[in-house]
Amino acid sequence: MSRLYICAENKNGRTVITDSFFSSPIKIAKPFYYPDHTEIMMMTASAGMFDGDIYEIEIIVKENASLKFTGQSFTKIFKAGTKGGAAQRVKISVENGGKLLYLPQPVIPFAESIFDSRTEIFLDSGSQFVMQDIFSCGRTAMNEYFAFKSYRSRTAIHIDGRLAFLDNVKLVPNEANLSGIGFFEGHTHSGMMYTYNSDSNNGLCCTNAHRGRVFRMLSDSAQEIWDAFSDEK
Image (tube, rainbow, N blue to C red; front, side):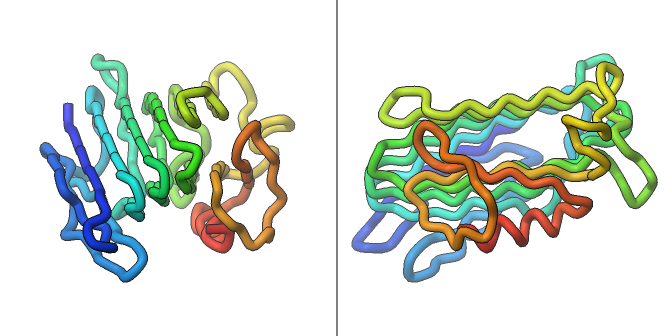
């Protein structure tokens, strides 16, 4: 199991990382400090997530702090074996006046891979939050489409302690034609973005959730989805 813990606080008008911890292969780059926020980039010393790998990530943004969290490269999920694939567990908390842009890189599940991601987010009503979840059907440059065994991504967002949004994606190619109608409809990539108390440029169609807004997009390019979502942040 590999762990990453980050706590960001506002100190005299500047967001600083007051506490952090990580274990191999996860590590973080030196923070980038900007006048209005601080940016953290997660890196790994591994080529990707292997069978049996479990990543645990916890991010806390304290009152009036502003943090942007990104990844160094796409998350590659390698072939599953006897250990049941790879898993990721993320816990996020943002306090009143705090702001977090949680922008991990897209996930690429390789052939025969299994991946299970669970994200729990706890927001105070006076916070700001943006997250994205981008998925590729496989290594499309190698003509690999929906060749993984199983992919799951579950995101639950709580506001003031109450569940406000739940996104539950479960993809099993052997159980359905994922490229067909009602699924990817001929496309190879999908993206979901959730925003709370965050302005947007209204360049994409969105759905008003119980609290916050949800954007969804199908494409044949992860970069196209990333760029489209970037215009909304």
